[in-house]
Image 1 (tube, rainbow, N blue to C red):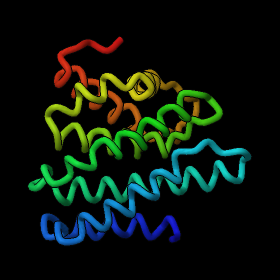
Image 2: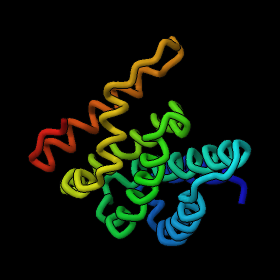
Image 3: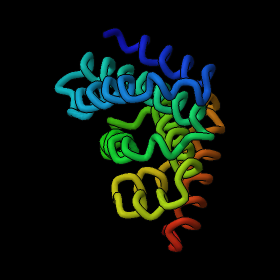
Length: 173
């Protein structure tokens, strides 16, 4: 399956809203399978480009589903850990300068925000994922001389940090 099709799935879920429930199980199983393929570390630059594209498309699909199913978020609970596992894999890759991609980081933080909004206890679980916490903190303090850096990077990172701290009852360094 081409990665771009995954993005369309998210768009469909967002458009259908809670009516997407009838497709949820099949689509989430497909996304979990794609997520597993996206968790390995690339061996060369071409593979890295493909992996970034795949991860981005999967994240866009998850974001569309989380946003579309917001009134029925409880149905997504069984899949939350799998989504967090993909986020952790991306965060761990992004914690190196070579693996840090600004656009992918914005999308990753967006899915984290969606998860934290959908599940009040998600902050405690995410707080235990040191790679994710390090990634969020890196994005909060990200400095770039490039004027093209999207403001959503820092905004989403600050929102994630605040929600994790509130839900987990801790202060992130």
